[in-house]
Length: 222
Image 1: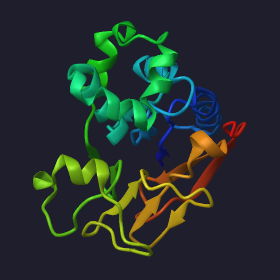
Image 2: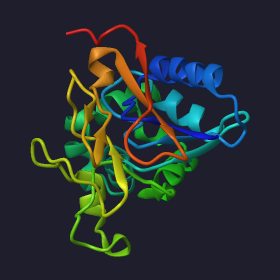
Image 3: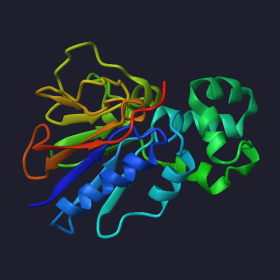
Image 4: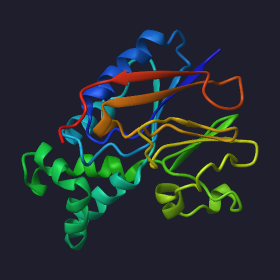
């Protein structure tokens, strides 16, 4: 039996990421286990630079599949086109620049390139992993980047994508996660609440998580 561990929106909380990865390592007993991170590594929290460095270094003994989030795309867009800078800074990019010493020129192109190359979704036998969501009426290969990175499901929407259970973040619910028959939303606003929820999925069993790893840290000031 193998498992997939899914880490939602980190937003610069390296402390929570490190604790979460340590919990996963302690629980993983199979070299075929996978860790899927579903985007939003940057903005808002204090250590975006550290989060990128940690994920770029890979995981010892576990496969890492890192997906792109809308905030990751915004960072790339701002650093490559200055006309996007003010909008990005207003949405949490100021914390990213602070983690790099306050100057956009300090952000290594390799970090920006890594973010830009991230995949938009991942599919296994039973599930579809994506940052925000999918349009159930559109074939997967024709989904727009805007949908995959920015979609918000209607309140209480419980469907998946065909036979696939959808696992996503993006739409934060501090009292979550939200668990439905066809989808799982793991985003519990970890950067602010200090509560990161990691989903544990049995690769041989369809549907939602078989367990949850709750990582608790210090809530953000203010």
